[in-house]
Length: 82
Image (cartoon, rainbow, N blue to C red):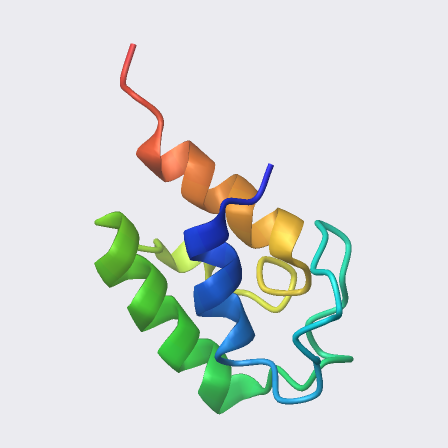
């Protein structure tokens, strides 16, 4: 489940999405205008907001293809250690 904070951050980097368009887990971020420069800025904002660091293995086009994939990565990094 995507949270409102994540949705708001993501929308800043999607120039081709209207406020009325829903963002779900399978939304193609490339189709809505997420390019490589915006991805770098998005990573920075997400790291600052969630207190995380995207490790090299997660810095791929696959990770940033859809909101669901990004959110899954964030969830793994913010999950409490067992």
